[in-house]
Length: 358
Ligand code: SF4
Image (cartoon, rainbow, N blue to C red; front, side):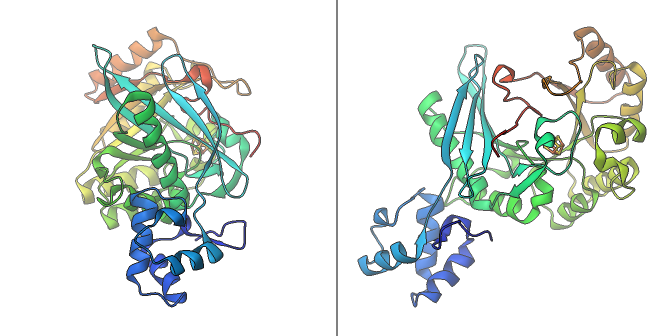
């Protein structure tokens, strides 16, 4: 696990087992590690003073040797659609963004509160339509740092909407399956009933399509949802906007095979994310190719209205092209949903997260 920048051990980066090992190293019994785990992740303690059931002398030792350094707020932006984007600073000084997205029912009551978390600072995948891809890869987040984004946004949800969060999507900065161990550990923390106790059915991990990792998820039989960023229905088009597709280990053929394996092994459907770019991947022929892929896999297609990024040449598709696309998919018996942009006025929408200072 990653070390904090100071000489003290940052306990937020440790698993429960590692906390037990840490206290054993301080000549304390292992159960003190479990107490620390409960304080840090279950109660959100960020100082040892709060840990009133720990002996005073042990708290003094902890003060001298350790710290619990979560993410610091650097900036908050409010969208007119009530989406809120948070900029956090890590202990390394680098920054990540997380987004709190409310959905309302017809009466205007909040029916869902989704947190979009980042798993890396920047991203190595270099998708040409994505602001985060422009940054390049800077660092992985630890499980504790991913967890802390959700913990803090859960408090923010209470403050701004009067209730806790309901859903989590790993669709912020980074490719989650490139930070595999920490992402899975963060889901373990989030679903632990002693902590936030979220249902894994309300957690979605979105990947660019790392076939080997998708197979690994299938083997390990995780129960969270999997979404795959497809974004183009042929190798030629996909490779030109998503460098990951240029390798035969992760091209469309390898990805489709991995997804077939995943859906058969887990008996779960996957979501194929398809971002619509004007006059690039939004023709009837594209829809027909996409249907050919979707119909091979237990899946649904989620069409995303692209949010233009000033530095990039892609444009948003028109409603008429979107409707023609949907019609073709439906005609070919593909289950399809459309995701409208949220928070695009504050650059909080998909593909727009960019931290210039990172
Ligand atoms: S779309 Fe996702 S995988 Fe691609 S560069 Fe952006 S953050 Fe990385």
